[in-house]
Length: 272
Image (cartoon, rainbow, N blue to C red):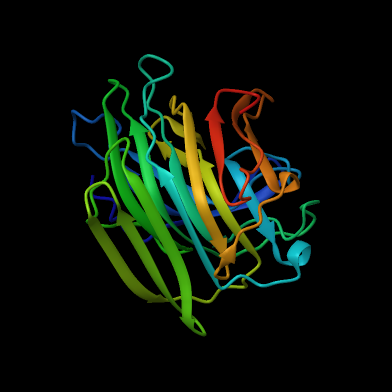
């Protein structure tokens, strides 16, 4: 899937009380059609508090909470197998690490307006066909695809590191295939949060706009998370559960593992 799209920005989309600022990327409405009629936008944590969000599930560390700005993040995950949950429905999911866009405290009274992120996409078209890709994004610029191929079950590594002030190196590696990709980009960050996230991006098209439906992903495994070059030291209070606007649970992260650098994220489950 070619994720390069014209520059367009949807900013100020309120979801659950916070502003969702993201960039446009087009994706096929149906894998068999080839027509790009659905836009996908990834963005900031959208929710009333730290513990629940309408678009994120995973872990979020904040600058005020930790008293440390974030200049580097890494993480590993296994690309989940995406299957259609509701027949005839297109469903979308993004697995990523990033700096910015999240809550600065566990109370989530302040959020970061910048976001640099990289990860994988696991989507299901309306005909049930699954597709997988890799991407990076510097909000508010458009999301861009990378040539790194990914498949369900692949072991992924991602790294986002500020090499000198305002210049970042992004690395994606596929340990399963041996492939890798990297780029160096300028970006002005406020360094306010670090995240390891499973997201339902915003989608829009001829049928209107709204947060996408999550496909069945089972349990997504994150591991070896670091922040600023050290063990991420994840805490249960940093967990975010993804809930639909009607309050139903979409995805729930587990407690941190024994090393406090990993967790599972379970879709359509209130526990993990």
